[in-house]
Length: 434
Length: 177
Image 1 (cartoon, rainbow over the protein chains, first blue to last red):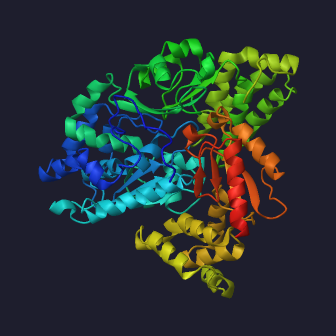
Image 2: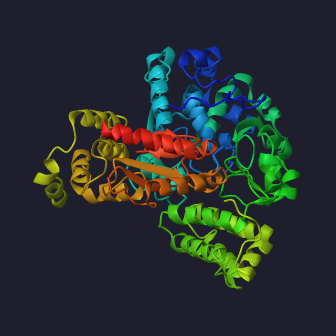
Image 3: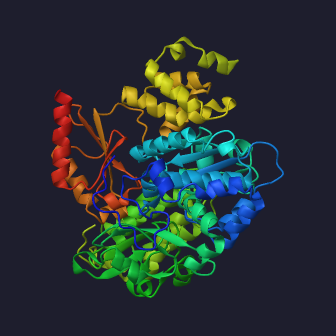
């Protein structure tokens, strides 16, 4: 495993990533940081599962994978009285361009995920769980396997955990290079040993999930927030952030900044402060644009971004989405046509091919942006791109269609003059580095 | 009947993997309920690919037989997931992510350097059969850009031209040993 290149400074407000140095990932270190106290507490006090869910609801915790759905509410959809198998799944298939936060949780603090999942399993009555890890981060997967082994050895997983009568079996598994498997129902298909093609919803996984059984799927960071919530209370978590935007959030900052990396901050932090934490703009350049929530979210120009706070509702108000918390920073030397071209290629490449609007549309978008970039754009192309985007968005089984369409529309909306310049002059408006 | 015939044919029963690989596959199978052996197919194919460097039809047929799946269902999986190779590759497959966040941190220059150094384009293999170069999509390690994966499993971070030269030299020397 790569040693961390520098001291891991995730920021003063870190909860999930607090106190990590890259080497203290083991069970003993985690326990020394207060780890497994929350699980031990609910097992010893025999807290009613409904009360665990109520605490998570109170915390305002929202799904950290991209959709931002309230976690406690999601947990309450699981049928409590159902007597058959129920499954718990962690979506660690982190492949949204710009996002690399779950990797740090998994490799530097894997037990926090194990504890979070065990608590969730207790709350929902799941006997089995799977942690589905992105295929490309193999050393991190192996770290997860080591941590799991430690937890089983210590009686923190398996049958009759700590003599409580509660049993939970957790396993790690991995993908092998398919972005679409980050979509929860595609992930379930993949877990069942199939191509990762998303399922039509409803029925939702809480009713018909893995092997057709009730299943809850949460992101790694979501589970990782749970032990703290149980230890300190939902209200304390909520108070860290803003109403409806509780707690801390890990932002992965990339692009034209001095220090790309992960920063765990209280939700509601001004964007400018986050930019400072990442060392500011690289080489003293000027901020031109920012994609605040991963490549699938709309891009925003500098002036809007600088006036925005980093929480779900503020970013939505500014015209984009917090998504997975991947903040992609672009300076004034970046060509927006070329940037969009690379993103369009990604969605074209990763479309699973199941729905016609996405399968055909993503290729169409890529080809049109490609000809604009290469000086063969036509005057009607910008309207054509909008039209194709509109005909993909909302017309596919999963959100990949929307994810391909949203960047296109936002790039043209905010940087139309650059696209028009490419079409009119057959060349770029800015000296592109990308 | 038809399925039994297919999965029971002589070719499928030839043991294509070492006992160590089979042991590792058994460990993956054990993670799932007994009636869902198919769930282990991605792990099984990854283990098979580690052993043979790529997935031939014979290898995939064997995995199908071992997991009790129709061969076509295994081919579907092997061709759907990017990290599987259903054609021979060089001894070292280098995959570099060029997606936007990585591109903003010099991944495009790193890719160009690799192409020039190896004299091949994406999807090609060097004449000596040592290196195959592939363009990857998000590895989930954007903060480490540029990032190169060696044979899917070894991640190399912050790969500027100097580090890339070092990696090529290291692998070339390893191949000679």
